[in-house]
Image 1 (cartoon, one colour):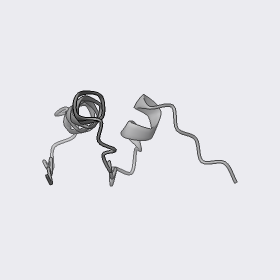
Image 2 (cartoon, one colour):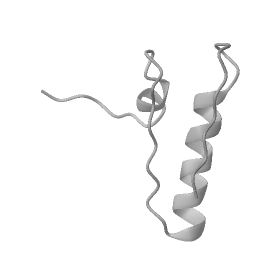
Image 3 (cartoon, helix red, strand yellow):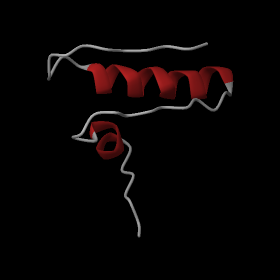
Image 4 (cartoon, helix red, strand yellow):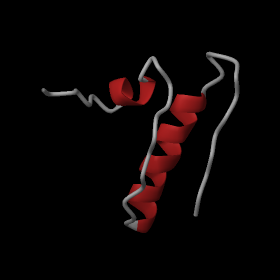
Length: 54
């Protein structure tokens, strides 16, 4: 399944919705979702506490 969440307006809940869908898929179907964040603010990385370690 491919799901795309798009909207030009900031603050509309795209990152929150995408994160929750991915978590739900992971927990309910034992699938490993691929979540791609193209937002320059990197909201999804913040939600999931992911850090870029160099």
